[in-house]
Image 1: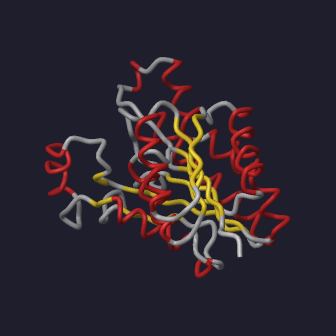
Image 2 (image 1 turned 180 degrees about the vertical axis):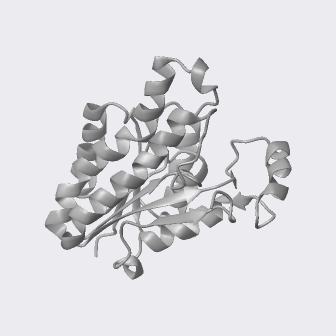
Image 3 (image 1 turned 45 degrees about the horizontal axis):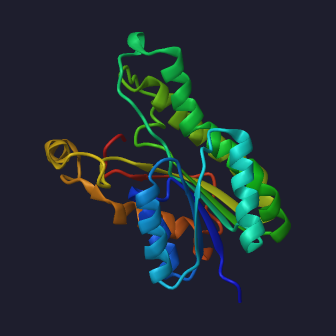
Amino acid sequence: MEPRVALITGGARGIGRAIGLDLARAGWAVAFCYRTSADAAAETRAAIEAAGARALAVQADVSDPGVAEGLVRQVETAWGRIDALVNCAGPYHRVDILKETPAGWREMFDNNLHPVFYLARAVGPGMVVRKWGRIVAFAMASADQLTAQPNVTAHYIAKAGILVLVRSLARVLAPHGVTVNAISPGFIDSGSAPKSELDAMAPRIPAGFVGSVTDAVAAARFLLSEEARYVTGTNIHVSGGWGI
């Protein structure tokens, strides 16, 4: 039996890397894209292969719709299909809303929201034909609360948009055995933030501690499983109570 195939955006580092390795250990073939982290991508590819799985690392800027579609076609050409799409990529910057630039504003939507649509549009038809598929997109804790976010406004709106997109895709794809869900992480120690900053945040998190990538992996593992066949259009908070 051929292994299932996953495509992960932002899969060279952090949560995306951890999900890829988890899937590899479960016997999946794992393709992932990265933008600039060539060394990290090479290390991740080697780690996936060391786990006994097939790996494909592709440098791709999926904020470009043509590149996003080309990435999907490349994976499908190599391995025949894509069974799961995991959208992990999503940079952000902090800036007062009145000091934000048009370019900075567009960047948040181009890199956080639009690729989820471009890629879902490209992988969806194949999943429909095969009557099985999983799409997971990472939003952010509190994105469903619609609270004021004066220093990360564009990023927050883009992440809130992911939740609407997820529900819309879930409604359309549910009759075809395809589930679409969101994961909203809070403060996760993925290696990108200084430990001092995370330690300072811990007392403000209801659970009292900062999460690890394994917490996010556990949520993704469930949503990508056969056991989650009846779970679609949902948003799982992985935040220790932050943002609810």
